[in-house]
Image 1 (tube, rainbow, N blue to C red):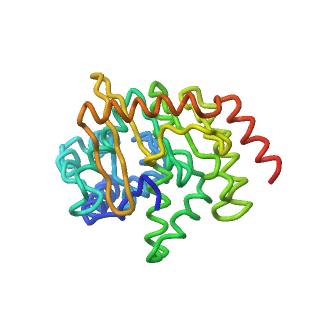
Image 2: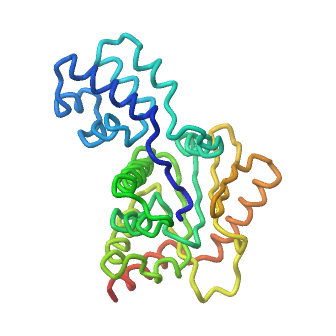
Length: 273
């Protein structure tokens, strides 16, 4: 399964979404009228109201102001969680991503979730064991695609990705999914705050043989890391251990193809599809 799995919608998300919808309808707004007032898309508003997406602080504040300014939504928003009993390391890491000065991800299994195209996301969750119900799969797809807003909503955050060449060559989901994935990767590589490097199969050296890792640098200078296995994840806040992982990632960047050479490789792979 992917390194950054999003849990199913929780009861708190559904309850909050129903509360937003009730207040919106009480004030006589359709979703199409309400969306520009809070400066979010109609799709995002619908996802929140249906409990498929966790509302962030900006949405809660704007919605509360538009819907009477009573503070009711602000209070309700404090009790939101994606899933009852969700591990604290996941909630913490998701919050750290939104604060990051820089976010670095090495992945050797799948394309990182922040870079996945929608067909690829569907292919990933389509491989879940046990299989997901249609509603569960759709919820996962929506959550994954919504999370990708980070790349464009945080233009001052530096995003660095190193992906194993074998991940792309695996063609998860088939040739058409791979073509769409390559197009999506190349598009994201043109963002000024995104750097993507490919770790070639031909490399004789590799600094991250212990597996995938995510690294974050915060505004206060702290450097943290996150590591995940099959059924568990771990937020690494120990300074010595986090520094070691940051050091390994820095070495891996020097071993991977340059951004320009990585782009060239992906373009050649796209042309061969």
